[in-house]
Image (cartoon, rainbow, N blue to C red; front, side, top):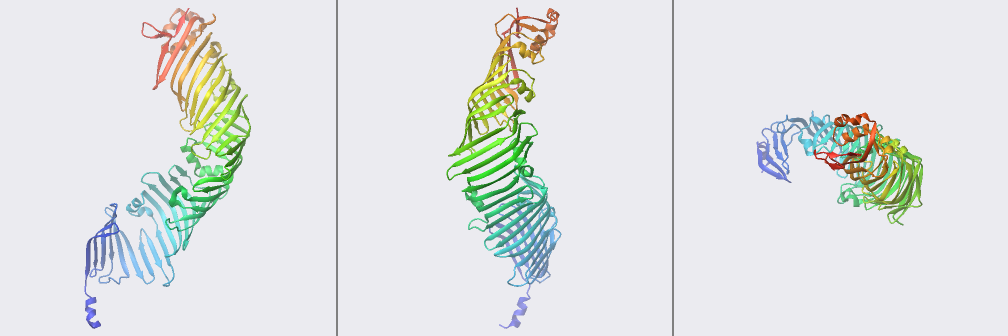
Length: 603
């Protein structure tokens, strides 16, 4: 057959059409090429998960297929205006130009890499389908990509300006982001540099405010057999705030077990790092308002994702708290440990501190560790107001794990209650607080006290037992205790509060006490005067106060002859309350026929 006979056949118009094409889980309802009209139509297209991608249409000049060099490309998504592009295809060059995207691929020689330049001037103008495929509810900003690509080597520069995003679950978000990324791959070796210069982000519980200076991330790694990237070294740096370096092997595809690395903390400025993201984590843990100062240096070694050895140094640091829960001045920490001998040494000290505004004096202590147990090297004395807390022994078990447990035995030497109540902002009264603590345990943030605390107050005694505190410095702290009161002098007690004057002695209890956020939510209280001595008197004002406290009015009492006397004798007084579910069930000495109860029995 001669070439002259083939010419008419090549010039014939033809059309290829296929219905419902499946390609790797992607369903194409229709695929059609029409040479006469010069059009290629694909779609509607649907992914395996049911996501509709819309349809695509390539329009060339009539009869130009398959040698089409100039064309228009339209992407049609349901319920949205189509995206239109001008397509130009020449040897070694491809250009795609549209309002939503501009793309240029160029190769100067057959063996040369492709040069790529792509621009998305407004990511928010893209069809909402694209953010949805990425799990985003919104996407905005301008994106530019430049570089060279070939199968085994790529060098790309990516820049995001004024970027914003929000995930559908609301866990991740960003606004006004300024990011630059340099990606370089040579064979299996990969190098990545990221610069974060502007904008804020929310990464789960971590909020990252806009940095005052650019933050740089540098990664070096390689392509793994079963993982896209295995890290071999990394660095995080921000001038005057952060400098962290790491080397080793970090295989993210195998979780924590894939981490074998050595980390060097050249410098972490606590105030800067706190504002850079740590503050949000502290706030989620109930430590909002904490203001640290100072810097940390050190080194850490991890094998199979576990800390094996390390050292940390903190010198002349300080910790403030806007809510005045905790304050530490002149804090220094020096920690060294190694799994080789399972040994550790922790030296800690401060020049001054305060817990809930109660001042503590200077402290220096050393903990020696072996087999994951840190022990106090020698007894420790902590000045507390005008008294002392004598810590006789202390053990911190599994101190590197989440199941750590602190045990100590201590003795509280007398502390003046006048200074203590004044520091706490309570009504000031006299007495002393002292006691022996044979055992105190801290497990999972819960403080449990063995034994009891003895208080000498109002010329009597009080004993606190069954004491436990959850989250003492965190969100919604909780306290449980049982308190017994013995022979308190009513003259001293009422003299400290503006409820009138009483003479005599009283005993009682405050059992099943439960506080939430330092407010009572449950207790069983009972107080009754002792039948000792003859000097038992009560003032008119105290009668009115007890009557009001007991749930009754004072009008009846004030209308009697009692108002003619400033004070008068009584035989006994008894008043109780059981608080539960925001209801206080009051009781007195005995129930009276009228349906109430008697609080004061006269002589």
